[in-house]
Length: 275
Image (cartoon, rainbow, N blue to C red; front, side, top):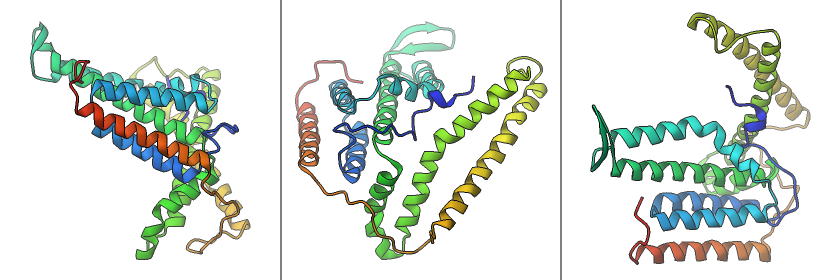
């Protein structure tokens, strides 16, 4: 079953007035990058539990429905299951169960838990950023992050705009995919039965209109930007200002406390078997 727009969370924005929504967008981007980097640096079971607790608190402060984050991981279930199977059955180590040429090892189970947990947390932290940050705010954050590169001729503003548009087009394309899939299903087109050649032809009935709609939307967006006198390479001002407030300082202090706690956890013996 192809993922529908209702199950695609990455790229969507939910307009609310929560404490997470009101944070400075540049700070939110930096905090997200720090959390994602921390998932690769701190890899103990206690560290992942601490990251999970931090995410739960941030999710509560964002006033978002927990179902959004379940939907965010649903399109990745195949990748997660593939990762688990790959590590469980093909990681050498101490065998726990052996059947023929396949064996389940203790190290394989640990690696499966490690990589699947990291992947889920990475997706959920990214989804929290996109769900609580509008396209304009995200463009401002990426542009400010890449601004030092503009001294070397890098088009930071254009790259930020391009990256934001690409990110926001993800739910739009999945919405178009969902509409086309339902329309073809109503016409009795089968995607799970018949020969392989027939199913490939049926999927072509989805891909062709999907690409046509995508190019049409891209053309409409280009015309709208042209009408608004958008020109690549031109320096543009900011209609909205995003000053740092007290809540931003509190968010930085919380992240600093999280990192200090993670460093402290690395210096004491683990109470939970290491992942």
